[in-house]
Length: 319
Image (cartoon, rainbow, N blue to C red; front, top):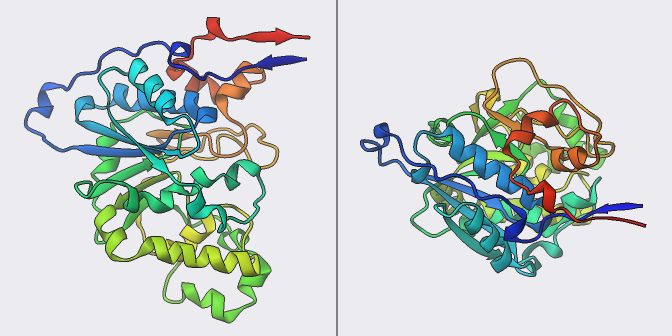
């Protein structure tokens, strides 16, 4: 039997080069705020995501990172790993209290989707400091191959959230029969044309989220789920119930999602047709795990150049 230990300290990662602003940034004081979760199991993915963002933006020193970590995690150790790998990174780490959602979570199709930190995006507006009025939320299993400023500066058009929207997807499949058979529940979509969107890539107007009480509205649907079992897929459906059909659509190039395969088997998938600005390994299969197991999918080789893990220092034990 072979065990590969996942990286857990700053020494597990190579130091990234310093990224400096280009000349065009002198006349552009636009700050970009990025929010991500920070978890030991996904730290390697987070490192790759941060590197890809800094490498592809013209103004890396204008990008600020906000990381949410579970209160029972080693927040200091995770932050130290980031700071030693990216010494010039503008970052803040916030403790997310898992007790806020533990009583609200219902079992889904994959255990990873049931972790409290997966719901931290619901509480972004409650966590970020008041001066942050707009934030771009990204999952830890992405790499950005374009200038993040183009996504972060999208015109929200009065909406609270912007994200790529997929109206060709079978929207009804995200909810159980108990939802669609109850007019009191499914009337929530009345007056909207609801389409699927992936919550792993979102631009949020934090001020509008706070003013509109969106955290409470998402929590209300989570409470319904606990009583009625109206969906099966973790933190995504309550977002859809509140926001689907009422978001600002963004070009699909900003979320080439599903590269991790489905949520059960994680089988290999290819790229969607069209231009690409962001690659997203949503689904069960993560590129660092498949590469380490020497069973990579073709798309995993697109993630590998951003991997800062010191492979030579991995501890491999056989017995």
